[in-house]
Length: 101
Image (cartoon, rainbow, N blue to C red; front, side, top):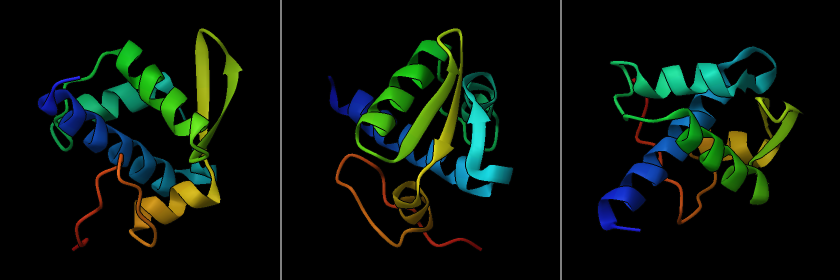
């Protein structure tokens, strides 16, 4: 993986966790998450496959749980994932959030 790809992955992971933290039930699906990542507010060009890959990584590391079907994945942030999103905990493979306004 190139430095640029690593940089984008770290940002994607944080953006996913921040969105889940702000979502009702800390839950969203791959389609919505992909749209959020591609939005003008976030601006990280992301395919559905990349979102799915990042969610799998986040699940493997205990930051989200995955449900739904293989063609319709639903992610839910864990307590640890919420802590990362809020900046209360850190992980070297997830960008640390900056201060919120």
